[in-house]
Image (tube, rainbow, N blue to C red; front, side):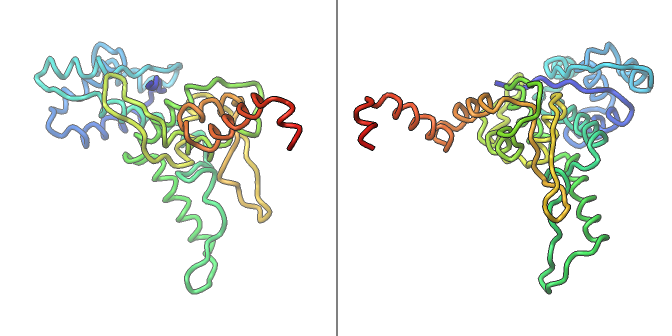
Length: 268
């Protein structure tokens, strides 16, 4: 299984993708990188893509197709995998979520409780805001793109429900995602790998899920949220991804108990 990635194109997203490809593919000529990027989003030329990114009235999303990116570069004499293209597109998607969700950090909603220093002193407001800024920056770092794509592949296996409900928590889902065996479209292993709580939330938001959270007794945001997902569907997916996990073991135990003749069950 893999993911489908669509992004909203704007100037910042385009700059982010170009910057990532420069870092990831330094041996490819700049003009070839730009033209390949355009082909990956179904533009005939980079000039057309740049014009679309500058059009503030434009709406809708563009689908990332790594095959078109690699085909163009192959024509120019460069044999590359589509991984760099998808990670560049993921960075653009993360920037959009980052702008839409001002509380979201790499750890989740906010950064949790106040921290206490080794000398017993509680962190100050400025120290906390520095921690928030750092965690927000990490959310849109190059190193976050693969975990985001893995989480996206997982949540796309589910279907949104009408209401947000318990049993669909981000922390549970992030642990399922970390065990999800998944490849990039066109090849290349993507998961299993570590997925932070915040990147799972970012992937779900990008996929169109709604979420709700809460404040703890000290007035800080709980870093975990629930989504509009079916609890049963989440458990089904958990049992598939982690066949030896707690949910799968519990399900097998319940099924075995139901198959036990009633006269034996009555004895207990």
